[in-house]
Length: 198
Length: 154
Image (cartoon, rainbow over all chains, first blue to last red; front, side, top):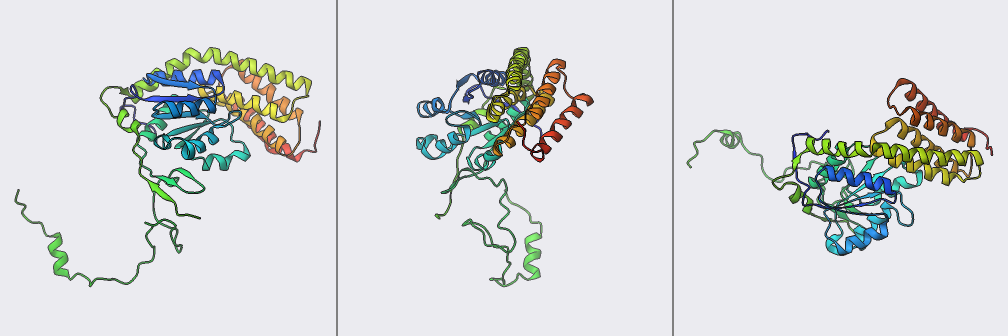
């Protein structure tokens, strides 16, 4: 769904860290953010430098390239979600990917980023994803094998015939009523318009 | 295995984005588009230089599939920021081809060469979306899809 061009967005006071080992790509991404009105941009060319920024600066968003030498974007997010200082762990992250190499698909799914943006993309797409992050109400899941935003955007309960894995999953089985049925008069009273005294 | 915990997080970005001021999404996209336009020529030139590197690899035929893969993905990374769809798609096909080749310990310079020539053509014409270019990119993908069917070659 495209972002409504009339929506107002204020990114002037946001601190955004951009990480890419390709200097040209880094320059282009920061110029896009400048266009969006972001005044406080931090940029670096490696995940190791990004780790330093996470520890020393307050960041509102991190945009990181997936493929980088030494530590790639996915490993960086895994580090962030598990080993960064506690108050920084859930800093939202957008990962930019180019080619999705076969061995990286699961790594991408499990790293814990808020959203993955696949190239090619337009400024509209980047802005839309930033807006999605700002409106993201998903809870963060902390488990042995995954730390990051809930990968399910909707909670529609456990699959039919299966026991849910979440504590608050409702059973799909409708059992016998525990209370007596309401009689018709009670139902009519509930639906009857009544004068309200204010 | 321990139970998963669910943590409710409120991002600072949420509050900042909603503060008074700023600009409309339309205006922000337009401004970012102008910034990109100012950098497009330089990026196009950088892509040409990267292509030159790939052409040299193809001439010498000594590079490993991973070297070609790295060069191809770098082109995707740059072209992908400028919405150069055909060029990006062709470079993506080359990335996919070399990823498959390296995973099977193979090399196929003939298929790589076809990709590089096509990329040079798209780069030289600097156009996106024409029927001819689209057909050529479709051809590259067909080549990539069949790459592992061929007997191994040098």
